Image (cartoon, rainbow, N blue to C red; front, side, top):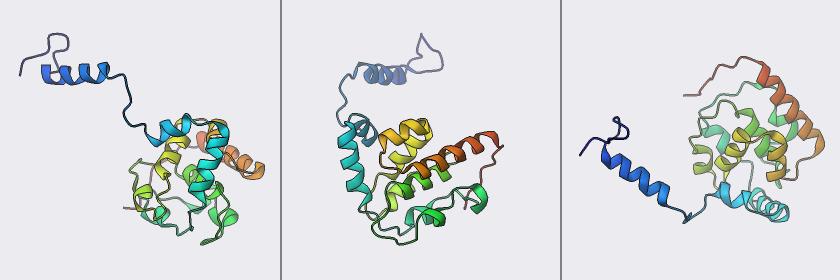
Length: 169
């Protein structure tokens, strides 16, 4: 193992790995995030409808989440969605939950791993975390205006508050 002459903190093994990554031009298997971003609006609507109609509102994704959400935070799921409600009002439940934890999510993926319907919940969280809400509503279409306005107001309020992270573990 030789020292890397360009960056003394890296060995030549690490440098060779970086070079291999840089030279890779073809994505062999796109992530769900990449697939969804590459879809047309109509394809996205169909994709999310297929995903969300599988949801049974078991709340397993919420129960497993290590992030504690105070009920006073502003987006109260029980105001919008009854527990166990089938068929679900999609994408309301999933977007409300994603925005409840958008600034404290640790991106562990346990919500997705425990979902009996195998809904790409971490992908939703990635969209919510890295895209402005208006873009999220384009990528995950179907949200009614009243809920959309509530989420936008919630995000603006949360941006102004100092926020300590609480975990349920």
